[in-house]
Amino acid sequence: MNYKIILASSSPRRQQLMQAAGIQFEVRCKDVAEIYPSDLEVKNIPLYLAKLKAEAFKKEQSEDELWITADTIVCIHDKKVGKPRDRVDAIRILEELSGNKHTVITGLCLTTSSEQRCFSVSTDVYFRTLTREEIEAYVDVYQPYDKAGAYGIQEWIGYIGIERIEGSFYNVMGLPVQTLYSELKKLGITFLPEGPSVQKIQGE
Image (cartoon, rainbow, N blue to C red; front, top):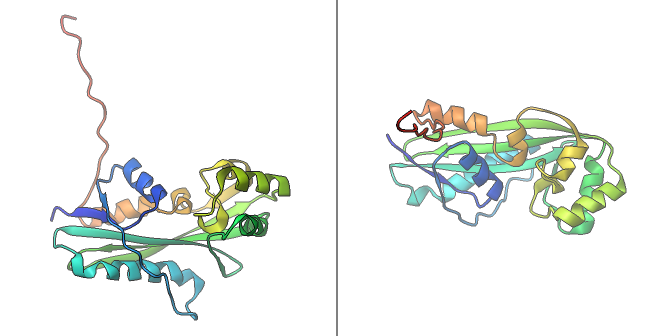
């Protein structure tokens, strides 16, 4: 079937990554309370929430639609790190990540009217030890209050602070594009790049 792809996410980074991968889609969003069982293992939280978001759209899903729902978390020392509440909290979070390894996990669900494919992708990120001055400057300029872990890997702090990653770079931005593309291919959906047309000069 020729599916119409719906991204159920207001994240501008997810939308940018989908566009960059050449995936044609439209965005439809709905507020879903991100509530999960208190005894749920941290590594399972993103997938649980991605499924919860998919369930919220179930009644309005058409047969020709494929919905993509996702949730990304940052965790360190088996503890979930959320979005910072304010400047003080952002600085506190980055001081905790400084000089340490943390893990970024994204849960993804691809849902049609007849089936659902769900999976998680994890990436380990290693920060060098950051100075207080560097952390405060980053927070004040970039104000990363909408980002889990209080940073964006594609921003200044990623260039100067991250020593290495193990896994998908784009997963750290919020969407493991390569895995998503592979899963779409299994459903018979591919998007290939279209290069610029070449115009021949007449008379030569």
